Image 1 (cartoon, rainbow, N blue to C red):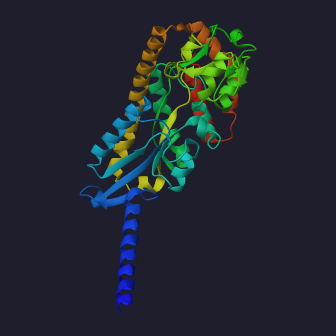
Image 2 (cartoon, rainbow, N blue to C red):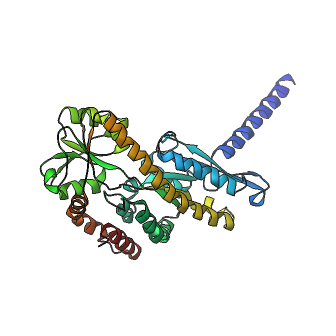
Image 3 (spheres, one colour):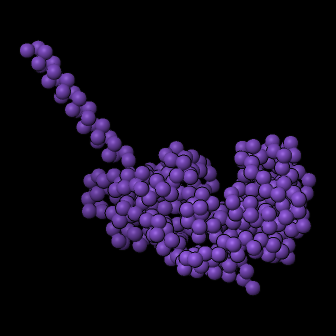
Length: 353
């Protein structure tokens, strides 16, 4: 009898543990549907969305992202709760798009360079000089390409929310500035990704693949002669110690996109979807101006630490962009109607005259 009672107790205990684990799993994972709890808004549901973020919580890109999260939670009356997982702690940057598509995560951010192999049109927003450096022109471009980006990502069964541009592209070198295309000829230059590699080739340089964590030693040991970078990275990694010659190219590079799983998006009320779309465009504009300020501060920090900075003149900038035109033409060589339209618009802003 005592054995029977003990058996019943064990069965009961295991049942409680099983139910508790099931409850915990539901409340922590967004999955395809997101987590739903009782709330007075959104038909009595609270949706928790786990979000994969490749950068750190203190990265400048996180500033406007945090505002987006706060504003969405306010717009939803608390019915949407976003749970960010920084520094690739939820899933890798390379796997983020597919994880959003299949519902492994409810939302995420990843870069054009990471997705362009799967979505070739996004290479248009990956390359050096992809879009205008000027904030006003950037906003005009965004207004034109916004509906196209929506359609392109809809084809991937994900919802495009907004994106952040990356101003502040520079070439860093131990001993020279890069004022003209001739300055690149025969130079070993570190670039990131397929299309930056092609751009370096178009300038006459020899692209070299080097992990960013190894760039300091590569510059110090002359494994590379120069490297493409951003002002902020050149400062935070102290590249100015081994490469104090900084050429500001006056171009942006490689946009980052914020995307949501389709089924999670479909759970949201229509008025909230409209508000989120308007918010996305607003913060796309705001973040670009904010990141310009951050990059400008980084330039001053570089100077304060002994770096010499040269800014391309208007004429030099025009020659720099023109020299890379074969790469832009290669990007535009597509059979897709939407991709062609995107290429036409992007080219118009790269060559306003």
